[in-house]
Length: 71
Image 1 (tube, rainbow, N blue to C red):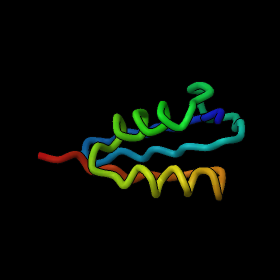
Image 2: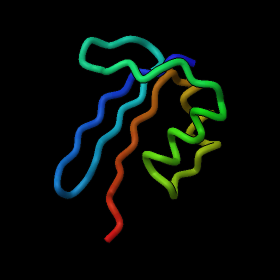
Image 3: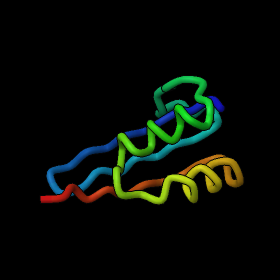
Image 4: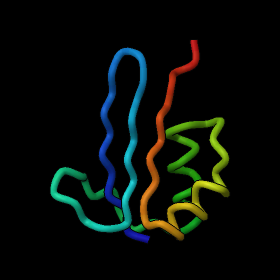
């Protein structure tokens, strides 16, 4: 699955937008297998429901993650 990403970071949160189609303001990350995608999602947010997120990406073609860093 080809993945494009937009990653906006602020001092309080991080907004990660993952898309399966090319967008002008997104950066191409690569062509991932399911295992590589699992590792990539854990790297972004270690406490996320990875299996659910993969199903959402496959169904809708995109995924938005709002990540609040743990203190």
